Length: 179
Image (cartoon, rainbow, N blue to C red; front, side, top):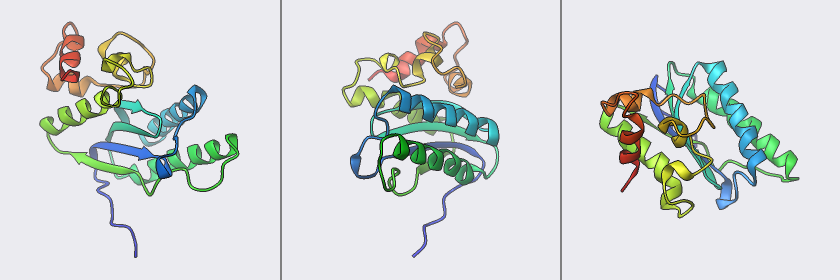
């Protein structure tokens, strides 16, 4: 039996990818950097915008603005490269990625804000940090203007949805990420 077709329509999509069997998707900082570099190549190659991302140990969440129907090709480009790298580097065999990536198209501002909040609060809910901007493997601190770790991320659509100006964007984003 084949897979159910994904919603690959142009638009904003919440996407997640995780390791099979709850195994680590990233073992260390270099793994995360390799994945991030490949993500940047994916964004450039397919013309996507990354609105936010958060790398945890067993999985990653991101919100992408995708201008066409390239999500399946782009995710294959990203995941197949990273899976091969991870297996070769860690002398591992088998499929790294559990099933296929998960995605949900976001159709309105309310869904965008809820998905953004969910993504950036993931490490807080997991007990990995006290505040969303403290997690070093999330783009949230970059979006708040307190770091430049992920300069390719563009959260301007979320900031605009909040009615925020550059002057109060950090405060509004932080308020969104709190309980």
